[in-house]
Length: 524
Image (cartoon, rainbow, N blue to C red; front, side, top):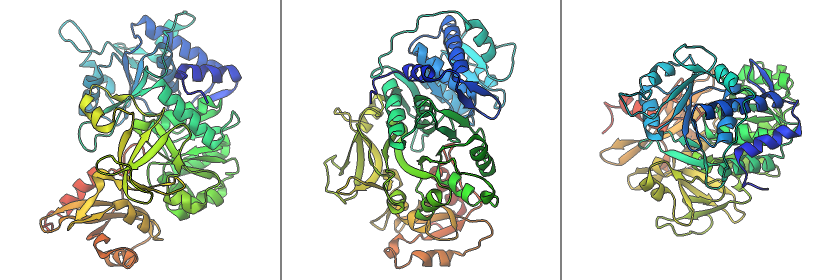
């Protein structure tokens, strides 16, 4: 498996396999590999004519649309750097990324008001802003270039693309969520992306016969690497979902003959629990990636044996370009529910103590990773890069884990989520996994709240399955006797919705803020 290959080369190899094959369907338009190839070349040519050069950063604020893929590979071809942005971002978030990345161009839609924001920061004689071009997608504005106009400008206009060093040249800067401070821009190279895509395909045995359902956002590393690039590398077809709904996903699986279904646990839970689930023919499903949150064993079992999808549990971070550990097809339901599998071929993992020393199997420590998927560093943040990576290329993830003698890794919790209650350590994930076995629980998240006596106390937010009622005491009783008493949440609240990130993770920082306000009068 050659990972020293540019993202553009991955695409061109796929195109050469079967130009007339359907490559993309986003619910609006169907695009063949030939059409995509022609549009990529036209857009790359047009961007070059507009002064976008190798190394220039380009912000892309788009949902799961076909145009995103065209922009993705056009930027790869000219060596520019893709800076994807969550479509929900507003002025402060966009301003931070614009100023930090020094983006030269931005692609926007009409839906989110981004063009109005970016207009104020266009470079002119009175300022020194970096932004020179705003490109509108699926709408026209006479003040700016449109995506379609760029395609016309570049159509059949040849240009010479620059040489790309896959190991050194950055393809994308993805900004982390910033849950513990300012967002950091992870610089991911062409090789980082190629490794993530190719190793994911190898693990899932993907081929050109597969049809990928990509319901996770394309502006997230999950959607970009083991999503878009994996599908293209296999010469497969991509089916996008712009707005996830379980009923729509089930319909697409049947109509488009989806074989590879990537998603977060919540998506699969909603599909399995949908009242019309049994009406759909899901026999095309073969496999997929489930990631971003723990998945109860019962759900893993149902995904495999009721949906017929031989799902694989993956683990990764933005900084590892997603895929770096995974379960195997030979692993049983218990292993898939309680571990994130083993390190993938070509990468390394170790568990270290507080002084970065390796510790024995079975002991809790921080997971460190090294390999061709690990980021180059954080953009313009040398100190933060040194904190996260050492000189030997090890990335320290901030995740507490254990590793057994066979190499299986079990996530215990985030280093920064550790609750210290009266001197005793509580790893929220351990307790959350117990509650996911409760028949009434749909989602749960445990956070620490300040306490003047104990330092911190544990508080659980629980979302119950529709039509179910429980009380706080019954929930506490469910785990009593299964864990030490100090691990039982001090407070349990029932919520209708959890604060979520775009990638489907519960936002614990936002949840903690909500719970602090709720318990303001009773916290000591």
